Amino acid sequence: MPENPVSDLSATSFLTLYCHAADARSGEPVLNDIKSLEIAAFLDTFLSSSGDPLARDLVAGRLKGSLVTHIAMRAKRYDEYVREFLARYPEGVVVNIGCGLDSRFFRTDNGTVHFYDLDLPEVVSLRHRFFGDTDRYHQIASSVLEYGWMDAVSVHQGPFLFMAEGVFMYLAPGDVKALVLELQKRFPGSELVCEVVNAGWLEGPFRKIVDFKMRRELHIGKEAAFRSGLRHTREMEEWNAGIEFLDDWSYVDSYEKNLGWLRIFRNIRWMRYIQWTVHYRLN
Image (cartoon, rainbow, N blue to C red; front, side, top):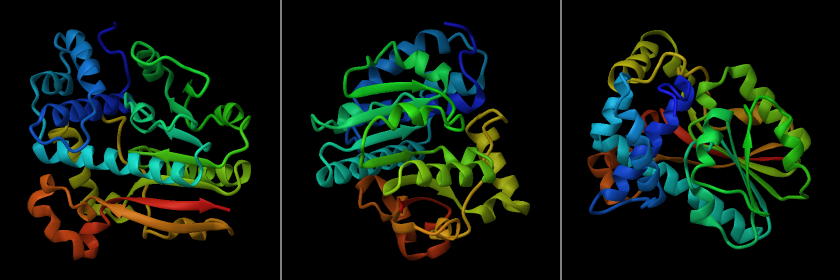
């Protein structure tokens, strides 16, 4: 395994994976992603010799408890989105965009779903050490912006659920809009669940706060910068006729005990919409 096997952007998948592992080791796990423990143990063997600050923090277990809780809550809610979709469409197709090292298919498999995990080649190459493709489970090595991956998915009739957990904020605004419109064009009637940040936090002094947290607190490389967001939760409806807002979800909506005192922000609108998830139908 090379010393620097992935880019700054792909390294965010390591952070998410180690948060899942920390949650699984806790006394009261939110997600309880047992597979993450195996993968984290493997990553320890080469990250321990890395000079990268993020790698050192991950191996040493220096993760903020609040971050572990938030990442686990987010993954649990996205699992629920899959289960809710499959309850309506048992033979539906789920595409997990920017899957990282997550094992969502194995947590949500109903025995009939066709599931695609999509990520950059360097990440999928690592995934193949732990996950094997089957007739219903497939891993695609591609940037989400290289639309050729859609050809593999379009062999199915649907219905389709596209998920982007912790992805869109790293893409340019024009790229996000073009991707959503392409999904609407190629997969009419599909559903989209994606995490977004408030575009207002990417401007002026707020931009410095976001960059500080990414660089100084999380030790995420500069290539993994937040680049796009939404002004409000229904903004995508303005992008094209037929895009229909269904619902949204914020961390503070959760009733997990581990959320602690942060639940007091549930009814404070600007806190709820700093970083949240939107759910649309692309008619």
